Length: 337
Image (cartoon, rainbow, N blue to C red; front, top):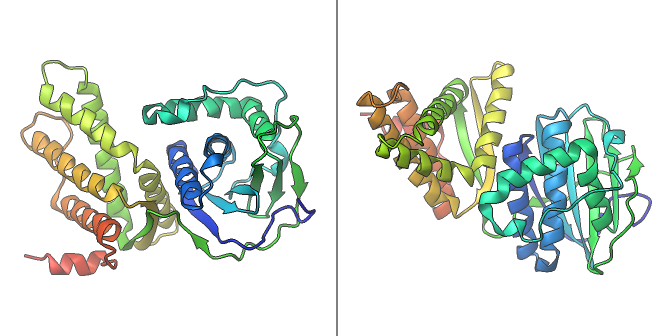
């Protein structure tokens, strides 16, 4: 690796923007796994998944960031992973610890273990042990202070060598990253055009209220319908969590800026289109329980129901059919009674 730190040769970069939130970490791992598959570099998946989990958890929990970007590039005989944040915590806080323990080798084969793994590595981050693992696996790694935050990068070689634990190389002169960003095969960028900011935040809060109440009822054998619905909602919300939290963070930022409408861009696998439609059906079922006063949470008002219907149409249509975005106002006008 040359002294300009990041290698900008040739190939296009795969890149995704995520909320700097622990819920985004499984999405970052899925992005890198799918990206390596689409680039024909599946031999790197285990080490890359472990490294991006650590770096994304670090950015989510310890960088004081709003957003993070995850980048992936294939070089001649290596791959490069970059996690960039916009937080105030400087690059010199990225310090590995010499002794550490690795998670089980098959931990990435169990989707149900995603959150437990992320929390475990978050704890590793507080001690630097997780960064020690990154240092051992990486052929080279470094950190750059960008002015707006920091960028941590690493390269993984195909030589299966382990390296000594060593601090990252540092740089404050960051080269421009002017490559066109792309997504892995099977992913798409969904745009919610002209999304109403405050209504979007209100519907997200309402969904959280529903989930919390259903979770409290999950162990209630006297309420089997609520128990089954709680389990369905938890499962349906797990895979698109990174997109949901990114959308919420965009809306929160827009609200703080006094904006009333915003375009929300979220990258996700195309297969989630069907899951989003199933989630909409489950929320409708929860609303019926609210109307029947079998839940304490108030049922969604018409504005919330319309917004969820629009979001479902947009996400599933863009993911599954490649449909062009329809703005909230245009959708509402077309569906006016």
